[in-house]
Structure formats: structure tokens, C-alpha cells
Image (cartoon, rainbow, N blue to C red; front, side):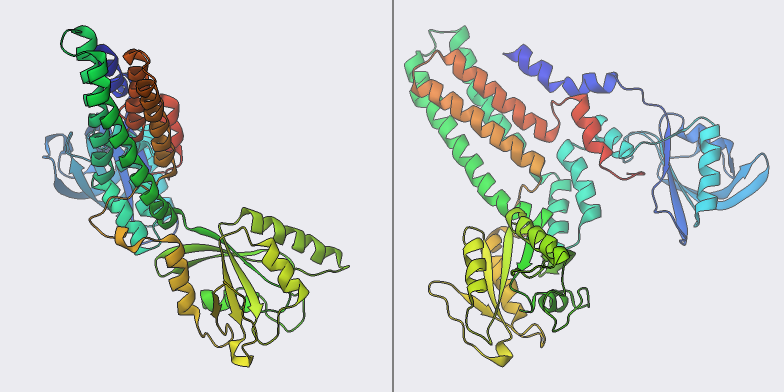
Length: 467
């Protein structure tokens, strides 16, 4: 057992040994005209390579965490006036020697400096390679590394809070706690196998293994339930706006976005294709899709739009079904009610300023006037009540939000359940141990304690260049 766990624990070390760590360089700021550019160099030769193109203090003799002023030159020709930020290993982001060159903005200057660095021995970094090295060098675990792109992509306070929590190691500590619990059970089994006189099998399973595995499954169930909130905050809600023609779907979209995203006229069938937009609804991202109104029509283009509407309904997580409060329900309204009855939906009664004629038994209708911006705050509250557990949205609560992490937790739960069944069925304790080791390994893939090179390569390719 100890050899198996040892080999898994040091998979990452073997992965590091198999990689060639040359000196890499990339621009960390976006392309285009800006006040400054920042160019990052990381690797064993970072100081010597930059020193060759730098007019100023000798970088080879410079201390870590200092700032140097000078010029970048090409064989004596001045390219730019720069500031250098120096970080010596292991006290840097990548845990390697790192220099960050702060130059004037503009693509031309940055490209000239990059060409000089590459001609002097550096290599252009791949997407996410700086963060990848930080992970492989033990500076970050995999959850912390993934949180960096979550921070970059954050569009709401809630998203940023979850990303910060993950970067601070909250998810790492949560998962490691579960791994230690599994390891403790495995250790008890191993002691029994190696020293059978220490405990009999029946006592081991009934008093130690079964209660502890049951408790672990309950913990993971709770984490997965709470992860629904985390995943909604991180990824948003795919939301489709549907209704019969001229009911006010496009007006609702424009009112929510506070801009004229969709064309609004009194002519039925104005919207013929899907219109997509993102809305920050009080901390929740709605990925809105405004659709063509559903009705019988001979217009070929409109028919295609209606087919796309039905497909969008099937693929959505939330349906906003808009009804016209100034008129009674029509057959077309009833068709849409039936079409969306099995979806998570919110009924919206629009044009409340013109009447209030619709009341559906056992259904709540949020009455609004999209034209006059009335009642939209109630929509925000309704969405939150459906998807967000407010007690979990706080700075001191650890939420799992990453789809990969959630999948691995499901995998862990399945292995633990198999171990529990083995114990309850009085199968040899070795069978339960195999499943427990699988659970331990799955948890390790979340933090990166044991994972394949293919997984690492795939994950970091999603990062932007310079990260």
C-alpha cells in the first residue's frame, strides 16, 4: 500500500523530470496601443539573457526583488527606456529566476524586445506556460493554477470571490482533508492485512470502515449540492426568452441590457434569428438568447427562426416565457406553456401598464412593463431564489465551481459507494481497499497530486499567452 501511494504522490515529480525547462519569454499585456508593455522572462538563464540586451546595472550581480532602470539595446542601438523587476528563484511566480521588463506601450516596441530576447537564447512561451511552471515547481497546486484564469475571466463580484478563494488554497485544503480521511481508512485496512491478529475483519468493517466511508459519502454529497451554486456563479445560466410574436421579448432583452440590442417594432415576426447577449443580473451571469416568436407561418426564413427557437428551448437551463398581460391567454400561449412545462421557467406578464388579464393556477407570474422598465427587480429576485443559496455566497465559504473538479468528485463518490457495497456484502476487505485507493487517486487529480501529462497540457492550453 505505501509503495502504491508513494508512487502516486510523486507522479508530479516524475512529470517535472521529464520536461525540459528552458528560458521562456512572452508579453503579459494585451496587444494594441497602451501606456506600457510588460514582458516576462522565466528560467535559469533569465538574468544572463536580459543582461545581454540591457544597458544599466549588471543584472548578474543584482539582488532579488529589486528594480533596475536602463535601456534595451540592439548592438548599441537604443530600442527603449525600461524598468526591470527582478525575482530570483524560488521567490517568484514560477519559482524560477524571473525578470519582468516594463517598456513603453505599442506592439512594435514589444515585438522588437521579444525578438532580441529570443535571438539571445530565450524561447517564446506557450499558452499558460508560466502558470504551468508555477504548478510543476510546486508554487501552486492545480486548483490554484486554474483559479488564475477564473480571475481573469471574472465579470461579477461573486465570480471574483470564488476565484480568490480558490487561489488562496481553500479548495486545496478541502480536497486534501477528504484525501486524508480516505488515507486513514486505507491505513486501517493495511494494518489489518499485515497484522491480522490486530483486529478481525468483521470488527474492522462494522466499526471502522463502514461508518467512515458512509460519513465521507455524506460529505461529498453536501459539497456537490453546494457546488450547484458555485457552478452557476462561475459559468452563468443559459437563458432563453420565448413567447408569441409581438409579446415584448425584444423589449425585455433591451430593458435588461439597458441598450437597443434587438430591433423592436409593432410588426409581428421582426425577430427572425437568435440574438445572444450576456447580462450581469445582480451578480449572476445570464447568457440571454432572444428568439423568434413561435406561430404558424408560410415565411421560410421565419420558419427556420422558429425551429432554432425550439432547439434553444431544449438546450437552455432557464426559460423566460413572456405573456401579454393586456390580453387573455391564446392557443399559442398555451402551446408555449406546454412546450416549456418540463423546463425550469419563469412566467413573465409583460405590458402590465395596459392590463392584468392573465392568472394561471399554481403558477407565479412576474408582472412587468418592459417598455417602462417596471418590475424587472422582481425578475432578479426570482432567478436568485431558483439558483443561488445566499447562505453559501460569502467570502469565508468554500464553494466548488469548476466542472472538472465536480466530475472528479462524482468519480470519487462512485468509488466510495463501491467500497461501501463491498463492505456491506462481506466481500474480502481487499476489494474495498481497491475502491478506496481509486477514490484517493480521483481526489488527487483535482489538486494535481497525481495526473497525466496530457491532462496538464490540455488544461494550460486554455490559458492566454503570457499567463
